[in-house]
Length: 257
Image (tube, rainbow, N blue to C red; front, top):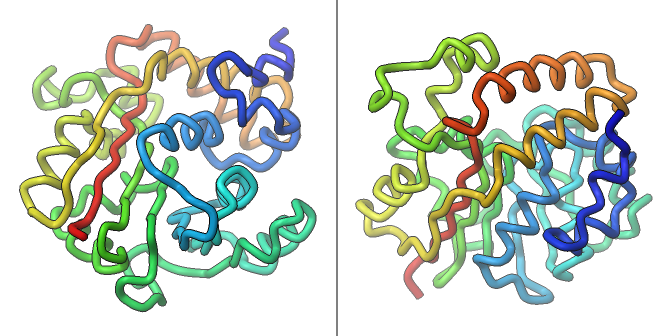
């Protein structure tokens, strides 16, 4: 049995280690969001008082982390989660003055251009950002010199270069795995627009192992049957993969000043 405390990893993720593991499991909508966000934070500059868009925030856990750990003002945007539900979570977490829940489609954002000092997406950007034209849309909301920082599931080599979708990925994720790309794919895709300068594009160190550990804990300790079943399914896929294909990509860029 994998202990809940396996999610406390102060050696690699000291900020995340301060959060109750059961709370983290109960408020997730994807693998290890706080680890990904903490790692992503090493590649960008987040200062107190900055205006940050948390794009695809889910149940607001990453928004709470941003507000608490970096003392930024967060707009927590999600299409599927009711703002009043996230507002309750923010109030309970003590960040209601700095975290503002918003119902929003990533392709129809209700914000003024140039509003944000940073736009962050954890486990969400690949659902819409592989659209060739999306980078031109989302960067309109960055202030001069603003940062775009995303953490997304990744493959180590482009699937077209390995002959297509491996069977275990097709069974585990389905055709949607075509939205998984390498850090270099994202770097080229963003830099060729000349809309941003990519400042970091890397595979997460031990991303496959982090993903697997997260699924082991969720399979045993989540109170949500759907999450438990999904974690068991993902574990079969990750065990079959053995880190050959799957990891996470962390990409950060800056708009012109």
